[in-house]
Image 1 (cartoon, one colour):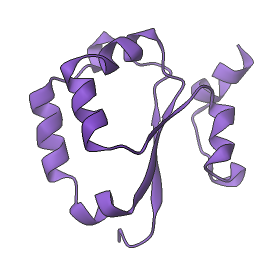
Image 2 (cartoon, helix red, strand yellow):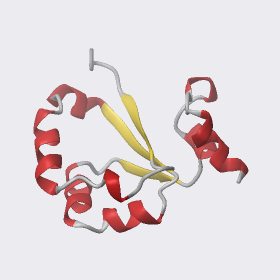
Image 3 (cartoon, helix red, strand yellow):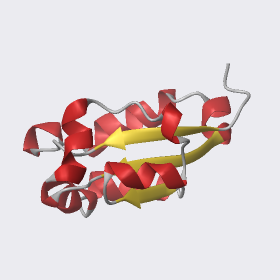
Image 4 (cartoon, rainbow, N blue to C red):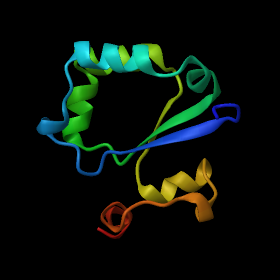
Length: 102
């Protein structure tokens, strides 16, 4: 199932304080992430990171994720996904796509 390279898209348009996860919980998630999936993970695209996420990324939990996966790419707007994913394959919710129009 994880034999082909894939891209993980994380929509951060609505990231807020309630989305923050403690380092311990993230460590548990990373331990359960299938090894084969990690080997074939081409990129983790972080779309439209807002101020709340940027602050979280500087926390111990954010640094833990960055150290584990060097494949993080920040994409300023949903339209920027086309550099990594074919337009036909991008299936963002309307709220996220609307960020480009604001």
